[in-house]
Image (cartoon, rainbow, N blue to C red):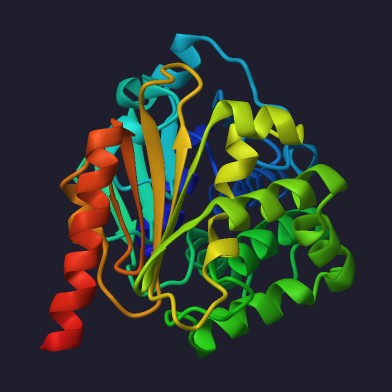
Amino acid sequence: MSLFYELIHQYDQITVFRHQNPDPDALGAQWGLVNWLKETFPNKHIYALGQHIGVKPHLFEAYDHIDDEQVNSSLAIILDTSNADRIDDQRYKTAKMSLKIDHHPFGENYAQHEIVYEGASSTCEIVTGLIKTFMLNEPISQKSAKYLYMGILTDSLNFSTSNVTHTTLENAAYLAQSHLDLPKINEELYLIDENEYKFVNMLRNSAIVQGALIYAIVTKALVDQCGITLNLAKEHVNDLGSVKEYEIWVLFIQQESNPSLYNGSIRSRNFTVNDIARKYNGGGHRLAAAVKSLSLGDIESVINDLKGRINDQKNS
């Protein structure tokens, strides 16, 4: 806690980064922290940096465009990113000071200071805890609280994951003090339009089941047919995991920039998957991981490894 406060007070220019293709936890942590810093320290210069718009971009703000000199003199805070290559603006390396805040299992040391808690449900939970302590439990603005609450809600899958603790709920309750419209937030995050509904139906119909494993390969042609984006399609991985017999579910998404390669999202109810993901240019949490830049042959290898994990643990 003291490290966070000391760095914030020390620097008048702060740049806030997060990972590529951001999910609501990365976006919520970034915009929640940026807005809280602006409200709490009006004399400081606070910037949100990034290039990818992520999912549901209308729920978040437009990014700042600043020159290299402004980054060079700043404190760079990097959120929700365990590996340096995934940071969505590599200029963080040139900042005068850097601080990593993350909840992923250790990836690599890329910042001068780190606040990492793998037991947290989300990076938004960690940021909320830091802010709550600083504010002595006094509520923050509705705008900042909403961003942070969205990240906690989505990364914890509506408070259903195994890393949800009393601290998670206490931090969410703290944010709710800011007069959040909780039903409205749920609608904005989870209601889908007819195009997404069509995609989800096609996704489930095209999924391949092999014992306790279910997976699907999504192409650009399929999402174009449904009128959605590849980035949005990625967010529907958990639509494959609602059947109790399926222990692991995986969604492979064709890359737009290189159609011969695919990125994948792996989810599991009980079996460790992040060690397998690390073999395929990825990583992540024990039960939720990602792989990237896979050929169709690589996909077959991933599937075989995951089937092996299921068989090994069931027979042990």
